[in-house]
Each structure stands twice: as structure tokens, then as C-alpha cells.
Length: 147
Image 1 (cartoon, rainbow, N blue to C red):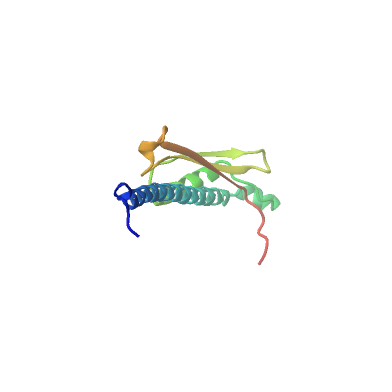
Image 2 (cartoon, rainbow, N blue to C red):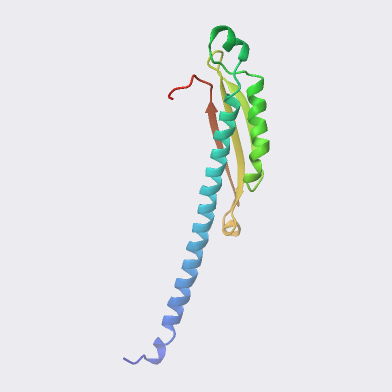
């Protein structure tokens, strides 16, 4: 098969177009993968901080009545200490809100972490190059179930 003079170069143009499309798709995959990975890491940190805070039980109430309730002064401090000790695992800075939710004896510790995510590759191509997401975890002390 021979190509006519006006058909030469089309394979090169199609190849270049396909290469550009694959690069854009690859950039999208990289940024989306980073969003999911960082969101999962932030969620794990929030869960762990809430659980660490929920280990603070009111010792006096437990000794006197056997009821397991949250120590509302100690729990936020334990969660904050956990975040301070383990925040180095997260690449970019985040904001933390640690609050007590509910009323005694059903108090829960709430840990909310918020972070701005900056697109690495697609940043120049999107209007708002920051994606803001927030993760909230709740935990409350309870009696041990199981062995």
C-alpha cells in the first residue's frame, strides 16, 4: 500500500494526540490517587486520636459505681497529645477540632480534621487548585466485649 502525498504524516499526528491524551489521563490518575491516599491517612489519624481520647474514663465514677463514662477534661488532652505525636505522618498541615458531644453519661469525643489538598499536576488547569476535605471521627468509652 502506498500513501498519497496528502496522506503522509497522519500516523504521526494520531500518535502525538494519543500521547498527549495519555499524559493528561496519567496526571489525573496521579492527583486522584493522592487525594484518596491522603484522605485515608487523615481518616486513620482522626479515628486513632478519637480512640486515644476515649480511653480517658472518669476513674472516680468507675471506682464508685462501675460505670464507664468519659472524663471530659482528660479526653481532649489525650486526643491532642496523640495528634501531636503522630501528625508527622501527614504531608501537609491540617486543622484539628476536638470537642465533647452529648451529655453525661453518654458523652462522646469528636475529632474533626480538615485539610486543603493542592493538586500537583492538574493545579494550573482547574479554577480552584485547592480541594478542601474534612474527616470526623467519634469515640466513646465502653465496657470491654470479648475475651
